Length: 364
Image (tube, rainbow, N blue to C red; front, side, top):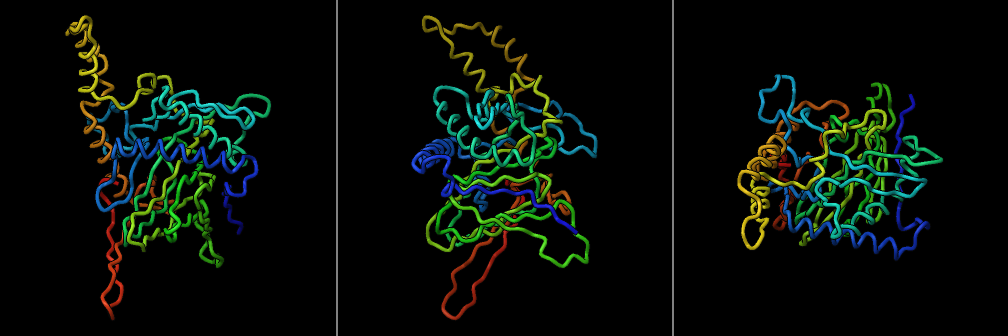
């Protein structure tokens, strides 16, 4: 039996296509931007999870039309929506992002952020070419979902992932992960892959494959194969981080419909925020828009907007709770933010180490 492992890795330290200083500058700039966003948004998973969402496609900037409607019993909350992709145009190995990344406004403030993301994606294109077809003599347009997370591993903590594939309703064909930063003092954390189908019982060889990422490492793989990360351990007395940038590429043969996404290219703006914004438009120090006009605008937008940002996060929480309870098969779950936390208590003399397992089910 021949098992397939379509996985490729690029270590920036040995990549001669760019100078080391150029790579370091790009990575450092992205880290600064993402950490600034992280401090502003503080979209952290519930204690004791170490996961901090910086750009999360599951935090919907629009309200699904069925969010409040009665659902058929077999229809899950996650089946009610699709991630919002960005349009990436690739010409040879040059990349241009043409529509906004969800939760990252395409404006002057983030102009360099977008360019640095393009630079990172350009490095991954040769590996993506091994999984999917590209136009050799012209532009290739890709739908790409971007996700950014940071694991803030506390002293004495171990965190490990569950088997999963990316996306659920999005037809993700290929996955790229770029590790912006991994603290050198973190132990473990290898990426673990297994074949798309379970090997026969008589298959005696090790079916899993492992890759150990480091800072400035990129990994690209087919979304057909389940993956997880092995236990990340912090045995120091300091907070340690692992921060990474994900690219999920939609199958070009099954694209996400974009004809209804015009309002969804906005950042997350709630009804209350929009109301305050419209009322703040002034002329000669007086409210410029009449209340009736504001009311009509909001009436049109209501079917798309959350009442508050808390409502958007509550819906995401309901989706997560529902998905982690679903029975996982060989491929695992259709959700990558489900993991186990263990706390290692330092023993007194002569006492064995004790490990306490905490399964993260809520708000991860």
